[in-house]
Structure formats: C-alpha cells, structure tokens
Image (cartoon, rainbow, N blue to C red; front, side, top):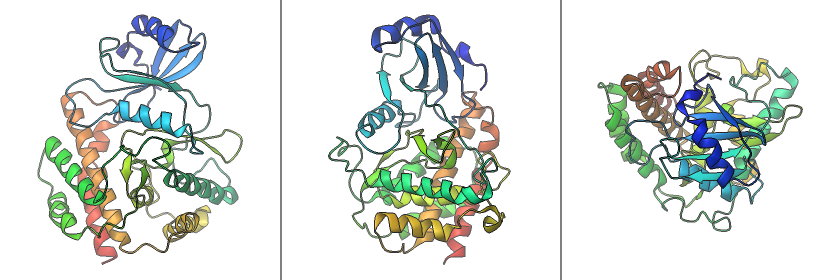
Length: 343
C-alpha cells in the first residue's frame, strides 16, 4: 500500500462513519491500496476494526464512469446469494464529506494473487484454484437477478452491440492519438455482432485473478472485488475477459500467461477453461469465440486509454497508470490478432 492517506480528511470521515455505520468507533486512519486504477480504494483502521473505503477519483469524470453507487447496490444484492462478496455497510452520496461519493464495506482478510501463474501455490494445486475461479464465475452468472432486485440493473438485449458503442464513445472521449488497430476494430466489431441469444446474467465486467480474495489457508474464494463495470448482459463477456487476461504478457502491468507452458505450470489451457464453464452452466460449446475475445481486448484498450488520459491530466489513482496507458495500442493489436487467429 502507498501512504496517500492525506487524500482523505479522516478528521471529518471518522465522526461521519460513527453516525452512519452501526458499531463503528473511531479514531480512524486511511491508507490507500496500491491496486485500483479507477476508483481509489483505502484501508480504514478504526477502534472497531478494519474496513475498506472505495471513492470516486478527483477531477472531471466521464459520463457513467466511476459509479461507486452501482458497486454498492450490487454488493448489497449479492449478500442474498452464494456469490462471495464483502459486506456493504454504507454509501455516501454527500460529496462534502471527503470531496467525492464513496462507500464503505467489510475488510476481507485473505490472499490476492497478482500473477495468474500462481507461483505461490504448489503445481499440483493450481488446477484446483482455477476450478474455484471458474465455479465462482458460473455461480455469479446463475444468480436470479429478479429475485435479488437487480432486474433493472442493465438494459435488455443487444449486449455486445451496446458494449461496443459504449467503449467506442469512452475511447473517443479520452483519445490522445490515432491508433490504426483501434480504428479497424471500431469499424469491424459492430458489423459482426452475433444475433442476440437471449442470455442474460449479472456480469462482473472485470473478472480477473487479482479481483478475487482467496482464503489464506484453503482454496476458497472469500470475495469478488471491483464491481464498477458490472451490469446485466451476456455472461460470455466475463468468460472471454478472463481468458483474454490470461493471454496478456507475463511482465506487463496486468500480468498474463503469454508464451508460458500451462501444462508445466499445472494450469488448464483456454479450451479446458471454456469447457469447464460450459459444463457448470449446462450450455453447449461456444460458437464465434474469437469475437468475444476481440471485444474484451477492445474494451480493455478503451479502459487503458482512459487511464492514460487521466495520467496525462494528473488525476490517475495508480502509480503504474502511465505503463497501463502505454498498453492501448498493444491491446488493440491483440484484438485484431485474435480475430485473425480464429477466422
């Protein structure tokens, strides 16, 4: 963690949380986690225990971005399900308290793995960890959104068409230079959207290894983190995004498994991951897999472009924001390569 506690006025925050969260007792200190490209996240230490605070970043915000209120809503809803999440305590929409909207949730003790090669885990156990990840994803996608009060959490139908339009707009809003691969994707993707198959689930939107907290002693996921991009949509978006992340370079700001021998590592290959997901959800094989991968790379490129723009303007929340921003062209080219690979 980096010592950015001065970004929060704890003298104002502590008394406010004592009034709004049952059992909360100060004094309170705040320390920013090193992770979190979009919404700065802080560990709060108080006399009553540890908590986590997620806030919007300072400065101008793109429309619909940094929606911490949506994160809070989905966390509250998922406490009624088997999906592992932190407990949501309080949402503050009064920007006068610390300068931006924020929410507070429980601090879940455990392990976060930043490297999808799982070097901390014995080779013969890594397959079990990957199976836990795929099972957690399937559990999320099996949630009955109507019964948990999330039937209006996203628009119905044409999910990928809307996602392509959204991230094209977000990319254009933060564009700093012309990237030929992005222009190719912006032209190609809308013309090749598969017909709407009616699949409708709660989609996490940023499903990757480092957004999961595992139990410290056993292969069990305690909480899924970072719900900012969650919505209702096609669950294959999460599956493709997870597999896309595993294709990234091993030494990049977001670590992947590119060029690594998965069999030697004891990690299932992409085909096995997809097959296991389909088995768990009782669905047939996936047609047009390359399209879903390309959309995932395109979206991550648009997100990275937003990080780059904020870094240039001095509003980025992460020390590696510049490195993430430099990935935009590479990600766009990987999207194009995915289409060529399986065309």
